[in-house]
Length: 265
Image 1 (cartoon, helix red, strand yellow):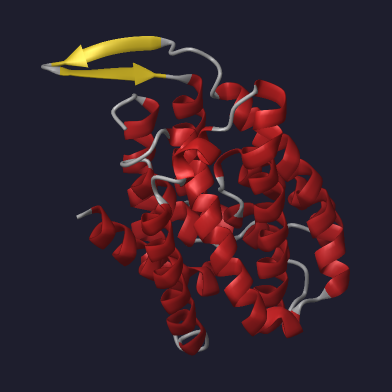
Image 2 (image 1 turned 45 degrees about the vertical axis):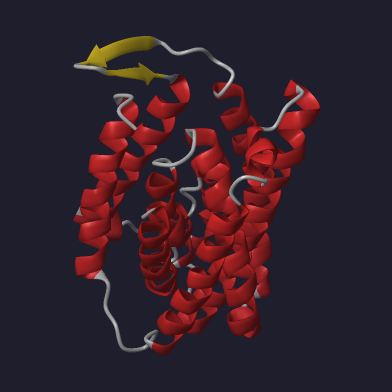
């Protein structure tokens, strides 16, 4: 059953990334959290997201606006490293509260509060029309890169800030897609480096490395369906609007973020 759920979610999410600059990680994280501990779910999502970004890079790399990429992407790279280490540190903090509902036990931990809270925040960011009308000057691109990179490293939620700032950079639709993809690929590479090897070097273990051998087939299935979603999304790039989809994803984030923050997920 998990293969069906994951496959459908990845297919839908990968297509979304072409229209909003986010989608795959946003949808994959709560799905993977049903099967893995939350930090492992973040890392597993990063693997699928990274593989999908490589595939998409081959399709849209010719549209990258290099000046914008370096102004936004280099700060994002550094901030992603910091965000990744913050995630691994949060995972070492013991549960704050433990409680039971009927015969089920739940734990509220700092990492669940942090990531669940971010999911709710980015849902609000998505649904509140005031944010879509924000007038962000292009001179703040490096600051936007820091925000996008840090939250990308911590929870994978890099797309919302990336889209907010890059849409104000004077790019064509194709340049936006290409540049956004290049930045996302950079952040994924940096955060995966921290999740895999940085955590092991500092804390002596990496949960993501330990669990990969047991989950290779699920991750491979996710990557394959992400490729299909990317192909479909590219074909629909000039034909689709995303307002209704954004509201649906935002409502889903509020629900899943609330369940995480309260320890139910």
